[in-house]
Length: 128
Image (cartoon, rainbow, N blue to C red; front, top):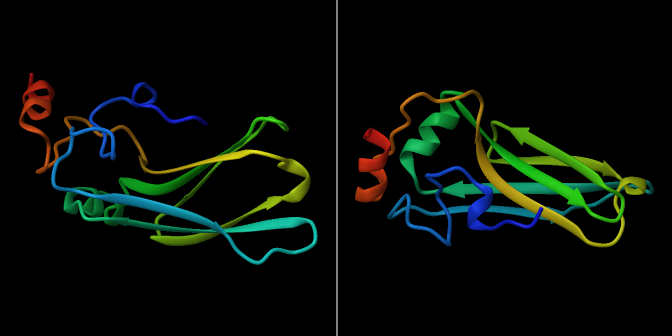
C-alpha cells in the first residue's frame, strides 16, 4: 500500500503532517528467522504520545501492520495489543515487492476523539 497524506482520515500522527505535535511514532517490521515455507516477521512499535498509549492500554486501539504484495495480490493486516509481536506469512503468498505499513488502529469508532497534542488548528476543527 503506497502511503500518502490523502490515504488517511485526519488527524494523523505522521512524519509528513502536524496534526499531532510534539509526538513521535515508529513501527519497525523486520524479517525474522523463517521455516522452509513461511516468512516470520517481527514488529516493534514505539510512540511518545501518552494519549495514544492510553488508548492501547484501554484496548480502544491496537498496533497494526498492513502487508500488501502487488504481484500476488496478497493483502492482510496483523494486529496486537503488544508493542512487540510476530506474525507469519506463507512464502507462496508473497513474491517480489511487498509493501508494509505500520500504524495504531482504533479497535472501534472513538466518538469525539481528543489528543492533548493536537495542533491548535486541528483541535479547533475537531471541536466544531
